[in-house]
Image (cartoon, rainbow, N blue to C red; front, side):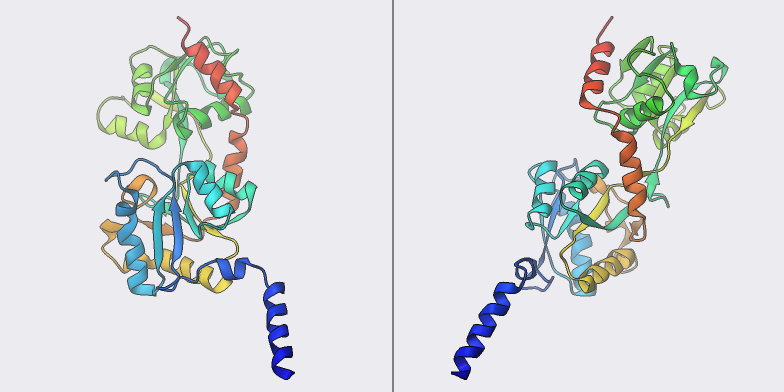
Length: 305
C-alpha cells in the first residue's frame, strides 16, 4: 500500500512539473545545448565550421556541450527558440527583436569588433553643400546602399523620418547604389547631394583614398546600432545562464583569439555579456517607421528616370 501511494505521488509530481523542465538540455555531453544560427553569409560558407572552434573551446574549458546547426531561414531560428527547439540562437538585431516579441529571450552577448559592441550609420554630404542638419535634406537627392542594409538604408531612412523628412516626397531623387561604397562614390562623383553609409565604410573609403575628408562630412551620426546578439532560451536554469555568460565573456582568453567569430563568421575581438538589452530594443523601435510599403515606394522612386 505504501509503495502504491509512493508511485501515485511520483506520477502526480511529474504531472505538475512544467514539461519544459524535462525538454530543455542541461549542457552535458549526453544532453548538449542546441544552438541555431541565422544563415548569414560566412567566411567558409559553413556557419558551423566558422563557429565550431568557439563552442569547442567553451566545451574544453567550461564543460558545456553544444549541438550547432544553421537554421533554414531567419524565421526558422526565431521559431526554433520560441518552440523550445533551440536553447541558444545567434540572431541579427532585427531577428532578436522578433524573437523577443514572439516569446521572450534572454540576451547572452554581442560580439565586440575593434573594441566596440555597436556600430554607427550616417548620412554624408559635401562640406560646401551648406547643409547643417537633416532638415536641410528637403529637396535634395540622396544615395542609399541596399534596401536590406541596416546602416546604408534602414537606419538612415529612420533618421530622416525622425527629423520630419519624408524620404519619398521630400527628396528630389533617390539612387539605390547597392552598397555602402557605391553610395559614397555617388556623393564623391557629384551624382547626389547626400549619401547613406556605415561610419566604418566611410572610414574605409577615406583610407582607400576614395573619399576626401576635407570635402565630405557627416551630416548626422546615428545612435549606436548593436552588433548582432546571441540569445538564450528563457527557460534555461539561472545557473546555466550564468555559466554561459561567464564562458562567453572570457573565452577569448582561453583559446587562440583569431578563432573568435561574430556575425557572418567574421573575426571579432571578444564577446560582451554586459551589453544592455534596452539598447537593442531602443534601436529597433526607431526602425519601426521603415515599413515595407515605404521601402517599396522608395525603390519605385529610385527606378524613375
